[in-house]
Image (cartoon, rainbow, N blue to C red):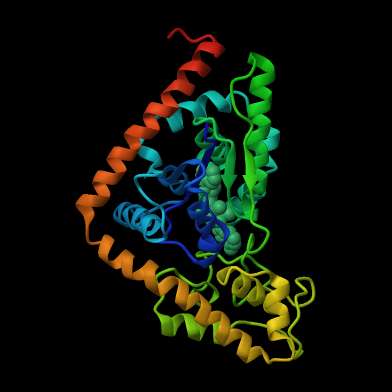
Length: 329
Ligand code: TYM
């Protein structure tokens, strides 16, 4: 029997290069071998205040982006998290098996509550429990994510193990699949930080940036005052980031990329990396996206159909969990 893969992405835009290289690219490579569910996690996005019309548009756009990046909506279950109530229902049940202390230690909660001091809502705090529910709802075996999600994944595993110990084997214990290269793509302007859409526009590549913008951003990427190209993330974070992006975009190892650029200048690496990324995102991703995004009826049809498939799978787990806890079915 095929094993199950689940992953999700917040609809805060159509995604940046880190989302693609750290997550979506790997999702695509898993779609033939596993039963995969990929969700637009709109309920996670509302832990930060959203403009309603913008959230709706971003959710639809991200769904179109998933497909444009190569996810087949017939093979995979691609859907909106909010279209299946099982996520929130299981999240409540699991919240009674998650501890205040372990949630307080989550790095993302500490970061986001510091950045949004005026809106430290309960959802922001219990966010990882909803994420555990997303995963555990489907008997998920593998969760392909970037490195920043590692701590949340550990919590999901702890909750699964705790529940299994209390009630007997109920949940599969999920394993993270974190890529060897590009697990944490760095910001182009602050290469000590991860690339993120919440930073200045020059620091990240949007998957919808036109070729000239991509080239301009890479040319301005912060490097260092030396001249030697070598992979050394500790001392040369900017150059190492470019080498990682170049390597993973061309499906080669970092070592091979580093030896290709040995003795060349920084400008050559910046231009070659920009060209590799442009080659990946303009065609087929953007050309497909601009076609699909117009086809709203088709996108609605996909999300409705796939939410029903998710429901069929998740309801079985939900019934089992409720029964084990002692709720009358
Ligand atoms: P999100 O929406 O922040 O990011 C989606 C995916 O992109 C990866 N990622 C990166 N990878 C490498 N370098 C980067 N700079 C970079 N930035 C983002 C993330 O690691 C992630 O894999 N909580 C999750 C969404 C979520 C989820 C889930 C994931 C909700 N439920 C269940 C897996 C399973 C999040 O906020 O990801």
